[in-house]
Image (spheres, rainbow, N blue to C red):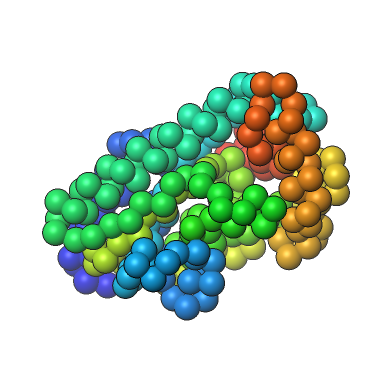
Amino acid sequence: MSETAQNNFEEIKHLAEQGGAVKVGIAGIEPKLKRYFDLTPGEFQSWPYAISVAVRLSRAVLESLDDRPTHLYKWHYKQANAVLDGIAFAITNKIQEMGYRALPIAASQILDWKKQNAHVSHRHTAVAAGLGWFGRNNLLVTKEFGAQVRLVTVLTNLPLPAAREQAAFGCGECRRCVDECPVDVLGESSGDFDFDRCFSLLDYFSRKKGIGVMICGLCQKVCPGSTKLW
C-alpha cells in the first residue's frame, strides 16, 4: 500500500463521515466483481477501484415496522438514499478536484426489480470492500450495525488501498431474519434467497395506500449487529 493511496483514502473517508457515513471501504474491481455491474462500455471505462459507503438507518423507524412497511419507513428510506447520493456527489467532486475521474452510482437505482439488478451491486461491492458479509437475508450485514444500513458506490481511478480480505460470515446460529420473513423467502444461506417470492411481496407492499415504493424492511428490523440495540 502506497502512502499516497492511504492518504487519498483518509481524505475521502473523512469527507464521507462528515456527510453522515458510518463505514467506508475500498474494493478493487476484479473480474468476479464486474459480474455484478451492468454498465455500457462507455460508462465502464477502466475503473480500478470502487468506494463503498454505508449510512446507518434509524432504530426507532425500524422498530415502527410490524408486518409491513410504514409511511414513516418509506420516507426514512428516501431520506437515507438522498444522504447517500449527497455523499457520493461530494466524493465525486473532491476526486475531480484532485485531478482524477469518478462515477457515482445512485443509492437506489434499479434496472430490473424482479431480478433486483442495478448498474452496480452495492451489496457485492460493500462485501468486496470489507464492510461486512452476506447474511441469510441476502443483504450486507456489518458487525456493528447488522443489516441496518444503506449503501452507495463511487467508481474511480484515484489511487486507493483496496481491501485485502473480506469479512467472514458472522451470523452464527442467528436466524431471526429467516423467522421474520412473512413469505419464507430466506433459508440457511444467501444462496437460498427466493427472488421471485421477494419481488411478489415487494410488489404487494408497493400497492398499499401511500407506499408506492418497492420496500419492506422486515429482515433489516431484526438484524441490529453487535451494538446490542435490542
